[in-house]
Image 1 (cartoon, rainbow, N blue to C red):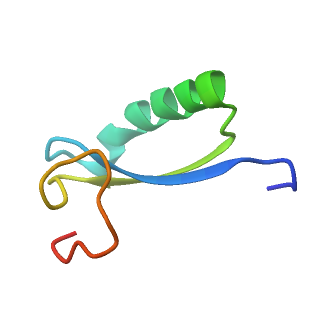
Image 2 (cartoon, one colour):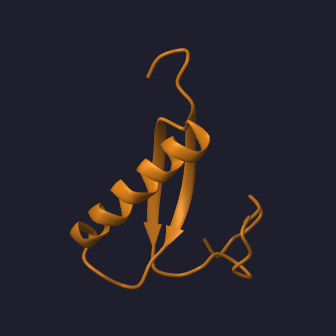
Image 3 (cartoon, rainbow, N blue to C red):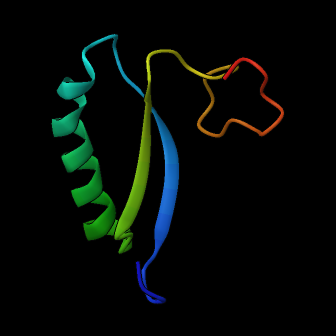
Length: 65
């Protein structure tokens, strides 16, 4: 990752499935983030349940994540 790279981390809620099944989702998300927002280093964490109330942004105080 260079000094001009734009990184982002996020949690992605998916149905319960083998981790290998998320590869296609990961590729699509990475492509979309690059095309729309010039984010070239996304770090995606897949989860099978939503954090807290299921809102778009989950605060750092969320203990159920």
